[in-house]
Length: 454
Image 1 (cartoon, one colour):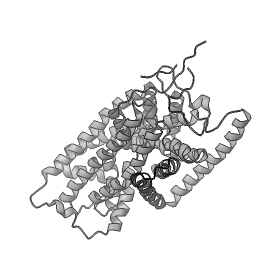
Image 2: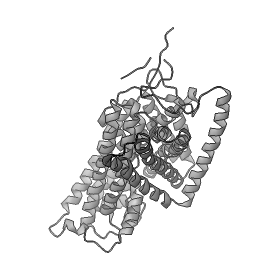
Image 3: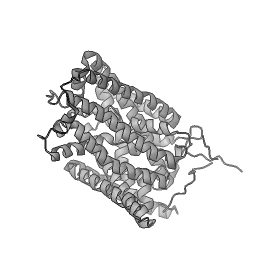
Image 4: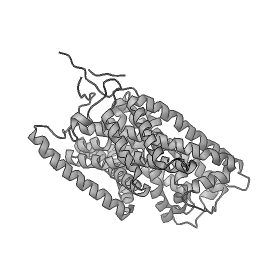
């Protein structure tokens, strides 16, 4: 008797993956954190963004190496599990769930805040619940459909930033000299570095494309390329307006740090550009939510497939859409926490989860390539020891900058994960279930039935 097996469908091209990653990263975040970034960097935004790009490049490189080595959808969870130890892999995956689970919560929360501000007669919870339903429905239909929507909204964001830069460029005069960026010595380097450490959070999201490996055509080649395209594109989108703004307005005075992005847009483009700003920002929040639901549902799928989470629930794929519909529904329900949680708490969870994952991906490169595979020539020592060590060092520094509340919340979450693993291991052992396989086959993973490749 033949059964129909269902697997994630390989349908994503290079640029579809890039659009999904940029959608999660959200180019408009440049304006969302403008005030905080400006204050932390003491006005030296261009220099701070350049340092942030250099710092995050090391971790992006490590993700590229590991996604080529293990082209499966588990991201940092899979890389740590296979390179270092299955149990440590579980803890990293558990920490990563904080980043991925709370990202759609942040999207829903900010979506409700902005739209309620525009339409005060409609309560924020209406927008939050409505966005949850839409994000869940779009993700259930299929990842390619999500990628196409992300493409449209990402281009709208890029176009807005381009128009913003055009307005800035119109104000350039012969008295403005680009070398002025490098001779402003009144701000100490340590202050710029502190600003860069905060600005690094603008780059969070490039890693989520690794969760789409099993739905990507030629993932070994495509995913590493997509990561670098995302990082370079984001850097250009952040650096160009920073350089122009700093040249034209070297000494800005911000009225409100939280709404500084709106202030600078209004200063540069007047009422016309600022009226478009809110609309584009809302679209950006929507695409970030769409991409983040995709990412967390795939991570849950891989953890379910490995029996780290209940397999029948989390490893289920819809026979028609080839999407983890149960996981998407779970994520949508969890995202309703946006009705009760504060934005500050949600951001702290995301930061802890993301930085923990980043740190161990860098360490995984060393463990897999330099230690296990013994690739230790001069070239390989640079690629598989020096570069990931630099990445791990900087990420470790960023982790040390998290406030005590973030570290406490992250620590409690890890303790809950340890307790869950002990209980689940005991229950599963009694039922004869094998936990956390040491390796994951490089062929398409199956749940039950014929493989469908798109």
